[in-house]
Amino acid sequence: MVYRGKISMGCALCRKRRLRCNRGQPSCSQCLRVGQECSGYRDPNTLRVYDQSAEVVSKAQARHSAGRRCGPTKTSPAEELPSTPPLIYSPISDDQRAMSYVIPYYIGTDQNQGLLSFLPSLLMNDPSPALQASAKAIGLLGRKSRPHLKRLAREEYGIALCATNSALRNPKTATSDSTLGAVLLLSLHELITSQIVEMSGGWKNHAHGAAKLLELRGEEQLNSPVGLELFTVVRFQNVISSVFFRLGCQVHNSPTIAALSEIARSKRNEHTRPIESLYDMLIELNNLAIEVDEAHLQSDLGKQQFLIERCVFLDASLQAWTTSLSPAWSYTVIDDPRSHLPRFTYPPIYDDRYHIYHGVSIAAMWNNYRQMRIVLNEMIRMMALRRLRLQSVPQYQQIISRSAGIIDHMAGDICDSIPYYLISGEVGLGSIYRVVWPLFIAGRCAASGSRVKEWAMQILDLIGNLTGIQQAIDLSQLLKQRRPASVIPGGDLITESLFNRAARLSR
Image: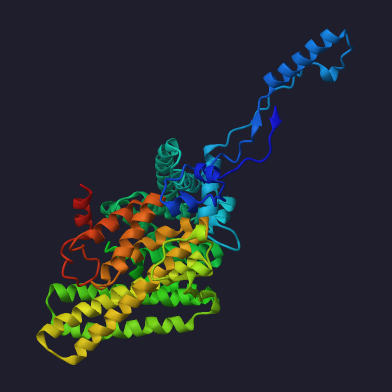
């Protein structure tokens, strides 16, 4: 047995063309650039060892024959036929395969943290069966190049569900960080694998259950960095499900959550305090959305005038929020991308511009802010249009034009954020599911002459094909419809559920 040096870890195309392969998942940048399906990568845990016993025997026999022709010679033990035992290597386990995906894609490093940066602490301090199984299910999902691992991912998801339900029935484990972490991972699994029509089922149940756990966990959960991070993620997930997914999870309105949010604010520093301010405005947006729906269904035009004023005030507050941010929230706008990127890493770029952020969590918060302003201004625009039909007042025309301009600006910024996810490595690709709905909102509300809608459809298809996120493909199909289902409160199609429409498309 001999070792013939370090093997190339690139895909088949990069090895054939002698190109540097960035080994991105699920496709390297070279294959992505030329539109070819990536073959996947060699197993890094396998040494390039060749059995050369036959070759050694042949050479030894040749020397022996030559020695007989030249007369008898005395051979040394080193010249005798080798009897080296074969080397045995332990194959990598499925658990290791799962975590080898979770770590780079969801956890990241201290310098480049992923959206589940709190997970190592949970796995170290409270590695419950529910948390371990849910983490393994997420990790196995990413190894779609190995078909049998997809089946194992479904099995682990079932194990995680049973273990989580068991933990929730036990008063000692129901309120632990580990149990809440498992529920979050289960909801992430649903986001990745479920179709839009299924969102009102599994994902809604996980989001609702996680929010209920926040009430049970009380003030103590806010005393640790992990507990505070879990509290933050669950609250935003719950309210976003109400405002953007129209799933009606109203747990965030409880007095208990409101009181805990005030305590959470006192735990923040100058860099993280804006999170609480944005959450407060997200709550206000949700309350406005409910009232706008009711006023539209009741054709209460007088109430709509009052709601326009409140929406305009909230939009001004959101714009002012951006001026309160510390440098940690800043991002760089690259106007000449081809002078900054190596040619082989060109991602899809909208309008020759893209953003660079200080981390995927910051990028996700900015896109939350942008889709909030899009929905808010779309509500303003629709209510003002109805008023304009009754009263030809210049004031309403000005409001409509201003809202249209804000929607166009915010939609463009969402599009400009996409390349960051594609060029920032594994952590960026692992968090790209967080941009699927902002991108859909941008495409849904873009002006008829804007390129945003077509670009959003293209990128949603790309995300779906790259990552296997079914919702990305479903949302792209919804955008392709002549009259896409409305997710905007007070919309003309509000009586036709987004999920019912998606169900018909999936048939």
